Length: 132
Image (cartoon, rainbow, N blue to C red; front, side, top):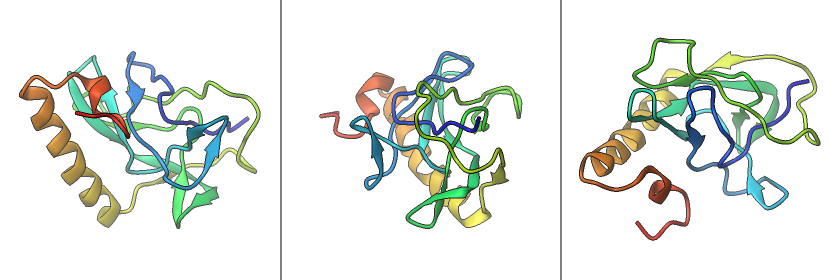
């Protein structure tokens, strides 16, 4: 099943989703979407969600589901999202790649986050609502 991924959900490299939708939540956790930032300890960078499910949309952006790819400094396709809930799923197992404009916007956000990490900010402190 294409279960929806949420803020703080883990990834196959040991990372986690840093921030997500301001609108939709499940069990008090925000739903992750294409372009949302993800920490990757394997390459030591913040990347972004590079795929979404076109059958589940939040504010005109496809929501991420289990197995969707993260774009970071790791080899393409090697970093994937892991859903930690089995309550909410998209209608079908599908993936679309992030549009170029949204990817450009996501890259601007993660570049700022990566600069903060280089300055000593801990990745967990980059999460939405953090005081960092």
